[in-house]
Amino acid sequence: MFFRSTSLSPISRKRISVIEDTLRVLVVDDEKPARQRIRDVLADCASKLPLEVVGEAANGLEALQIIESSEIDVVLLDIRMPDMDGIELAQHLTKLPNPPAVIFTTAYSDHALEAFEVHAVDYLLKPIRLGRLFNALSRAGTMRPLPLDMLKAISDAPRTHLSVQERGKIHLVPVADIIYMKAELKYVALNTKDKTYLLEESLSSMEEEFREDFVRIHRNTLVAKKYMLGFERDASEDGGWKVVLGGRPEKLTISRRQQHIIKQYRMLHFYSAN
Image 1 (tube, rainbow, N blue to C red):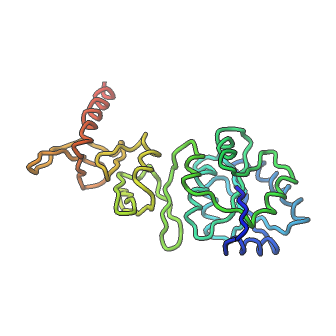
Image 2 (cartoon, one colour):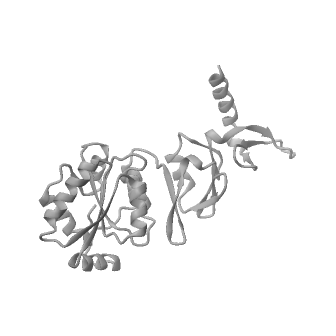
């Protein structure tokens, strides 16, 4: 993912100075032989380009922990991995104030690579060759992170976690733990059983990404289908409907436009029971 710029940002200037010293690299791949292969090629690169392999990770979750606790300049990031893949990790890294440069690696010529071509994102196809890796590392100072919306367009799967910043660090909220999302000014409040987190993304983008697991009950509210226990009439004069939730005491109002979900929900549970 290499973007050249004639006027470099302070972050880019910092990275160039780092490259003139020692480039700190993190290798992320779920297969140990693949990580060793990359280490071997990096060792060959080190004869001409000062670098240090700071660590290894087998998935995005492990990599994020290392990145937050270590000084990392470049991440060699596999696309397909369990628990959290490379594209999702890259989305979370956009939340960091000074994210490392990312070089994607993959053994597959698939949808993601087609999207990379469309968005002018560079990548390394396995088996990784010395010359190709050396050229990529040499450009690390001019790499710029892809915008979050572009990474979402590249991904063919919804995120497993949402990332929020707390005290300068990234906190990952498992999507499976979110009971409902509610728009609050420029934020979306992510409500789990025990806590509420504020995410600086739009509710409409959340609905688009997680439409398989969440349903809109109001213009400002999405509810996780698995946490919907049922419905009850509102005691107020208008006699509207509310959603009864599992894991939260509050009952959420269903707008008149969205009351069709009550029938859909009941039909779904009728056929599931039979």
